[in-house]
Length: 126
Image (cartoon, rainbow, N blue to C red):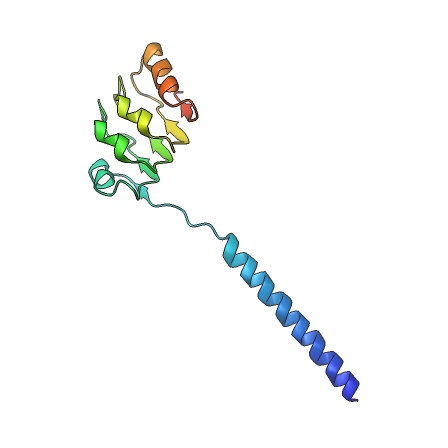
């Protein structure tokens, strides 16, 4: 009879232990989405915190050279603006992975210049 109780206890302990391992794995795999900044002034005031900057539909004609201060920026969304050129500061964004420039006024020459400034970045013009 003692053997039976011990076996039942061992099974419960094993199940409990496996459940704890499962919870631990779930907690570690949760991803925290970075804050998306939607205001350029706020982003420049917090340059090292900015990972995502969304400036869609802002009628922007230029980007300030301070954009280069956003050293940890990974995604820059500039769709639906009036941009004809980007400052050289854009080339300082070494961590930039994705740049969205759909629906702007960029010439073929400017697009090529941007590609050269950001050779490791995925750039979306269309």
